[in-house]
Amino acid sequence: MATLGAKLLKLRQEHRLSQMEISEILGVSQNAYSRWEADKCKPLVENLFKISQHYQIDMRELLDDGGTINFSSNEINGGNNIIASNNPSINTVNIQLPLEIVEQVMQAQERITQLLDSQIKLVAELLKK
Image 1 (tube, rainbow, N blue to C red):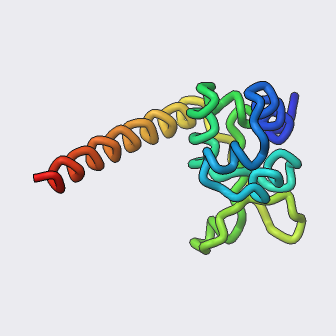
Image 2 (cartoon, rainbow, N blue to C red; image 1 turned 90 degrees about the vertical axis):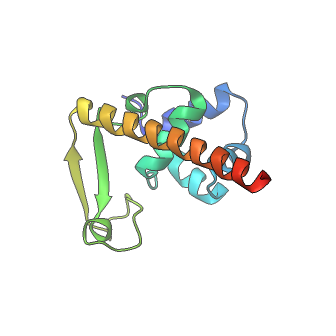
C-alpha cells in the first residue's frame, strides 16, 4: 500500500501543481507540505480534510492504514504542538478508527464549513446595511 506521502505526491503531480501552489491552496507552509510528501510527518485531520476537498476524493483514500491516525503525546496531553511525526523522539499513539467514525467526522466537518460560509455571508449582508 502506498504511503500518505506517495499519495500526496501522485495527486499533486496529476493536477500539475508545485509544492508551493498546493501549500498556498491548503494554507500551510511549503516546508510543512514537503515534509508530508516525504513522510517525515503527517498532516492534521483538518488538513487531510482540506486535501480531500481540494482533490475531490474521500479522505479515507489518503489514510495509510484505512483509518489509522497518529497523535503525538503532546497533543494527547493538551499541548499546542499537535503535529504527529515520525520523529522517534516524539512518542506517538496509533488509534485505529472504524471507517464509520472517520466518515462521521468528515460529514461533521462539511456541515461546519457550510455553517461558517453561511455565517460569513450573513455578516457581509449585515455590514452592507
